[in-house]
Length: 66
Image (cartoon, rainbow, N blue to C red; front, top):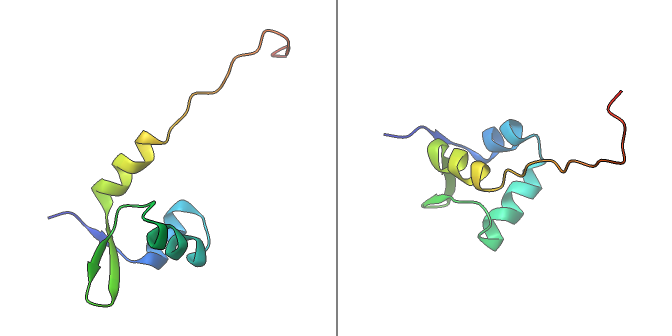
């Protein structure tokens, strides 16, 4: 079974505020599981969610890389 994270654990992991996590849940932005009045986050689903949002940096020929 996947490890379940609390909202506080997720906010610490992602280094965002707890209100931000709750806002993401409210808007359905982040995958979550509702257990009664509690909200939990499957660690593997969060990892997949983060990988989908990864972006590669742009390479600019104008900026010297010194």
